[in-house]
Length: 115
Length: 113
Image 1: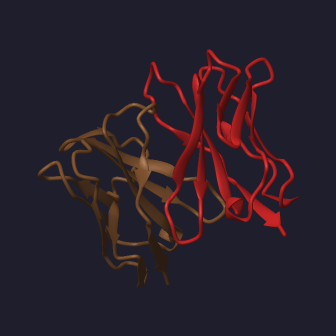
Image 2 (image 1 turned 90 degrees about the horizontal axis):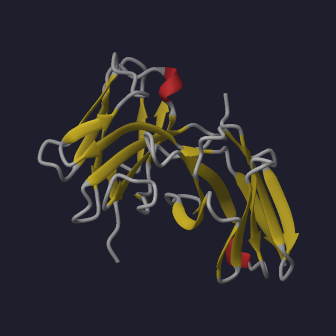
């Protein structure tokens, strides 16, 4: 069964360092999402791509976060510099189309700890 | 400001009994509601959804009820099984606007043997 792949699964870094997360969506899924889930909270959308274009990055802290999906397939989320408050689970999801009625398939996530 | 509220952080239910997970929302524009299930070390998986034009949707052991006037929905699991132990997220969207899914904080369900 096709799955969303994410790496690394765990990342420990010191504040002010740069970190990057990678996501490979299910083949054929045009829509890709990055969510952040703080402990005890639900996932919160950071950025949504349709193919290689950003369609929603309203909640992305653009002073330190960046995301790209250059060829409209896999995607990278970067944080530079990392801050203590960035410690969270970063989830990637993909779907066939950009509507909530289309099921979003989530990857296992990258757990980031900033020391 | 939480638009989707799951006020019970955890719930314990005996195996074989009914599990009822509750969710309230504040945004009257929400017209599509979803439940996701999450096991430890895995991403959330879609469970069931309901459109605001309906008040009930059933899929096997899982039924979601929607009460629009009360801005409340619930997920019923009958009968509860050990594999149902997980965190359940209620979520909602406004499909004719930005269609962004807003998640609640989740409820951890423990099925007791």
